[in-house]
Amino acid sequence: MQDTMPLKDMETYTGRNDPPKDFDEFWDNNIKKLSTTYKYQLVPQDFNLPMVNCFELTFEGTNGASIYAKCIFPKSDSTVPVVFNFHGYMGQSSDWSALLQFPAAGLGIVAMDTRGQSGKSTDSKVFRGNTVKGQVIRGSIEGKDNLFFKDVYLDVYQLVEIISEQSFVDENKLYSYGGSQGGALSLVAAALNSKITSTVAIYPFLSDFKRILELGDQSEPYDEFFRYFKFSDPFHRTEQEILNTLSYIDIKNMAHRIKGNVKLITGLEDNVCFPSTQFAIYNRLNCQKEHLIMPEYGHEDMHVHVDDYVMNWLSGSTINIRTQMH
Image (cartoon, rainbow, N blue to C red; front, side, top):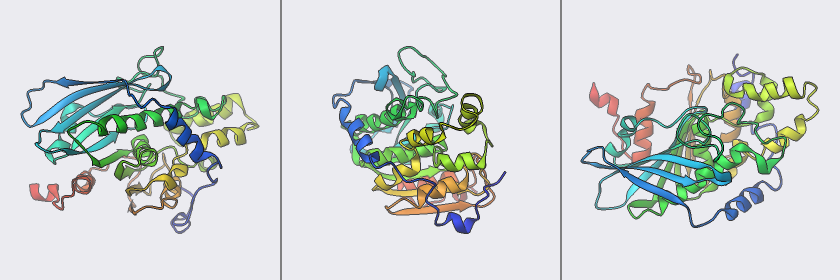
């Protein structure tokens, strides 16, 4: 099923609901509650690679979680720019070899495993490994302070803070990048931490929950949302309460906080993160921005030059790598 909203209407669409009045206060207060003395370990890894330094980062997240990230930095006599890369829902960060394209372009890369998904980050000291599915709505019945993704967003904030304080990092050149859930978290990084100056978000997840309900259960990532109502509230008596709570993690509601520049990529055939929910994010951005539309693409790998464009944007290069190879 395609998005039912005409493209012309999407171009001005800002979502079904506005942010709660205390939205900014909620997030500012949660950030203030974090300790400024971060408990972390940055452990060197010897892969016998002469041009890069590799590390495994672990740090203490909220609610007893242990957060893991792969870190690769080009060896340099000066500080280096860094890209924070986030993976899709239920996944894990890319392997070391796939991440090496970033230092080859002069960029450090930090790839975080989202807690409770398929990587090495733990959901809490009780749960290890994959505790998906159900994370989108986890805690919504108990209220905004108990939302699972609230803690994920705070993990993202702490990650940026920890890396930015490293002596070999240029804290004035910090970027975020990802697709789907990774696109959402790349926008969260910029919304919660003003140190992020550039963001590339591909078909971002977790936006405009009311619109998702209207469009129906079309894909696995949002299936848990609909299963809640089907099995726990078939008459939707708690719908407004649940939507009010989820509004605190709704990415479109984060958009106004972003100060750096944003490039957002949308496939018009996307039936996982419907285009209208992505336009709702873009149309709420008040920063320097660009929306790139791919009419033939859905929620799928975008290999055709997109990887090259992203690398060029983040590295400041104007070279089309793929063209140079042919």
